[in-house]
Image 1 (tube, rainbow, N blue to C red):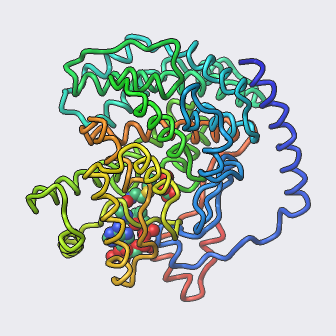
Image 2: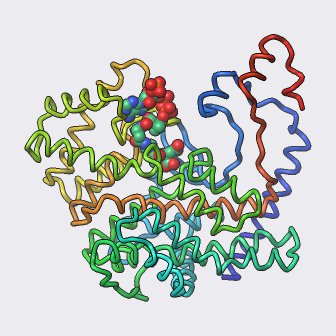
Image 3: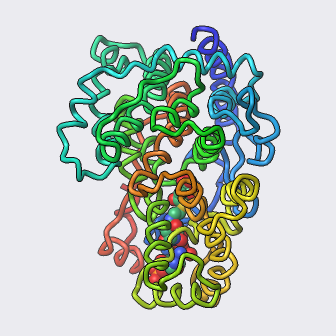
Length: 441
Ligand SMILES: CC(=O)SCCNC(=O)CCNC(=O)[C@H](O)C(C)(C)COP(=O)(O)OP(=O)(O)OC[C@H]1O[C@@H](n2cnc3c(N)ncnc32)[C@H](O)[C@@H]1OP(=O)(O)O
Ligand SMILES: O=C([O-])CC(=O)C(=O)O
């Protein structure tokens, strides 16, 4: 671990000095204007955060340290007999800013293996919840129970120097990421498999082990988990889960507290929970139509019905993206390779043909194209993972890689408490009337 930590520290020192210079020279340069509408409409289009791990292009989709998803599929190391990228490699890339070698990835896998033991009180906390509890609630409770292990919190209480915040955040992050697959798999087996738990396999990679502990030892399911954990990991800094983790971390809440907060945001249906909503919506459509192979005409009618009842079409639209999500495309490619004749997967593709023109015709939706959540559930169902309430937990395990790599950078770069200004509508009225001093307070 010291090897990767030392390398990180050297990079962070350089980045820190660069930012200081940058701000000295250009700190007063304006980067945009904010309209009143933006303030009322979820701050869309306002640049207000620095997140080093990835950057979203509205047309091209996500780039992790400059690399697109198709590039990652070519450049990141894979498992020995596999072809999908290993998420440990993406974590290394996001953290260090450079592509890992096979050796670097093996090193990260070994670090995570060594730290993967979950203390019993975490399982006890999960077991104390009724079995009907949503898996995301169980997951966040598990993460919160694990917070007892935070070295950031312990060291802060002992008077840790500011200069060491990054070091404690680094230690917490590696332990947390190492243990999340076990917590997720425990929840899955508790809720859906009669608490028949499966021990980790010390020979497997991080995502392969998650698949194994959940009870899926099929080679191509492990490959799916590697791809899934890679593509869901990060989506720059403004999305609800990343922003929340960053915000809560800015109060020097430790990585456990900050990540748990972020995952409560991921559990919302307009964000990560959309993956469960998509498959639920398709199952309900199949039931109503009495077929598991609906025509595009039948799908179009069902979409209209969804819109007429004042609901969103889950898996479609995006706050920033304006084209088909490359994470959707990566999953479509996986489907074409591994299950081209699967009826549900084919239905997802038919929905892709049908929905965008309908949403476009409404005239108000800025992006009629599918996002990542439109596809993921159908691939999981193919392998027998039909319990869709669990899907967002998988998303959460993956998202830890991005939001926690970012949190280490936040502490290494000494980012301050986040605290934007808010206003009341009365104060807006006063500002319109020309009495705007109140905003300069
Ligand atoms: C991992 C992720 O988080 S990806 C996103 C996952 N979420 C979903 O798939 C849920 C469905 N999609 C949506 O609700 C939205 O597209 C969001 C939340 C993702 C983005 O929201 P916004 O940035 O506000 O989108 P946009 O500016 O295009 O919205 C304009 C209008 O179109 C509506 N709209 C947007 N997407 C959809 C949709 N899929 N179905 C129906 N209506 C939609 C909005 O609700 C809004 O309606 P309103 O003016 O009556 O309030
Ligand atoms: O970027 C967003 O707002 C939502 C999203 O797709 C993600 O977080 O993966």
